[in-house]
Length: 635
Image 1 (spheres, rainbow, N blue to C red):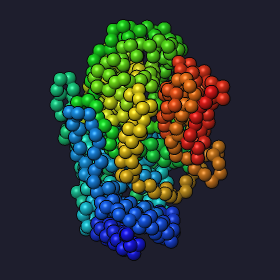
Image 2 (image 1 turned 60 degrees about the vertical axis):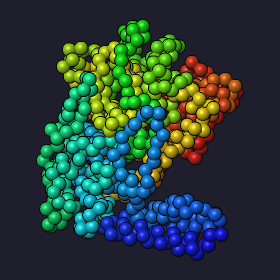
Image 3 (image 1 turned 90 degrees about the horizontal axis):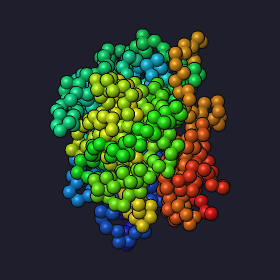
């Protein structure tokens, strides 16, 4: 039987070894654990007792448990943590090879802190893009190398985290971040091309180095085309065009805070959106959007990495079947008079709707036909291409109108319902402009390359939407692009194969969680100007957003949480999300006895409906409550 004292000694030894390693790299505690050391020791001791009760545990198991205990201890006391020392291996379909350029055991990506962890240059670009020019504050990036002892000693002497929290202005006046030059090129499973190398883009030559970025930098880096093969553009090379100029590096002499404040003053104060009303609310709005963009990049790095691949390349382009395409065009022409503005949550950042709202011509006006044609024309093609059969249609969304100025950031879709998908270019409203300025789809294919493929009006792309990062992360300049989106999942994903798919989804989410460390957000208070200058556009208006004075006193908005919908009735049922404006979006179809999970927010509304009906069933409406995760319907 395992001796308590021996296990405790081993765990303490492991903790000291990890702390010693961290100190050797120059790391320090961030001091945001939020728990006393006594509580931390009690938790660790309880875990040790649990281990001691496993009499015949194998050595490998004990190593993993000791690692987990040490990880939990570090989390409690606020010390920085490393990701697991071994990489997760996703099980792909036979013959499918997916590149993996990542390295295990790197420092975890910190989420929620005043000083954001930037995983690479595209992450920084996205943060800049999230805020309109009138509202965007300047930024500061602290560059360091976690594998360079001398660099880390100097970096720690700056007390950068503490300085940003206690001496520098809050988020609405300054974005603060840090960039690990050692970890950045080793995190992605895909190729680390020059556009991703933020240190090289800013000409960083010393370690550590502090760079001040002016307000005019908007994040729209123009990637360069490396080569073209079979109509596919391979992106990423030295000849890219960085929009950002005028950045400065601190020379290390004098007072760092004063140096930053002088440049903030020189940049001038950002305007305030009348919709957000105050600097305080605008800063919180930015903070929430920062969280969304950072989580999106972690999903592209780690959720995608752990999800299985089904096809050789992850995507395939082809014409939209003629009969189906004819119906789509006819539907659009007949229903465009009913166009409305698409409704979005203000915290969402995948699209440019805050600056450029998207139009929406709702296919649900002919719900029966849209699903009939999708099942007749698209499902067989996706099944044949993917080798996954039978499939179930989970969502047919659109038509969305992207006007000039729109962009769609690279992302992966929901892993419970959007497994295999089709994106269709239904129409280009200005063919001449579209020909001159294509707006191609970008994906990160299995070779690790960022590639772009222009699919004009009447064409579509089949793609593995829950694994393949995809988007159009550059502004549309080719006139209004009309698109529609169809999503499928394996029929038995929430039925006879539920356990297998649950295991796949849990493993993917666990992989992301194992590379993430959460911190507490602390900042200087906002200072409201005596004579505020408001922006020309009321950014954030007509989006879902709860103002600070509408929130509970002393509380911040809750993060998203997972809920499960269970069909306990004898009939097939649909689940819908309903916006505050009354718009409904189909979430999924559930066979009797099946279930699926989604991430949602406090107060969001859903309802149960008969299949192929968007009318709520009796007692079928649901309002999401934090602390409750199970929502069932039983006739």
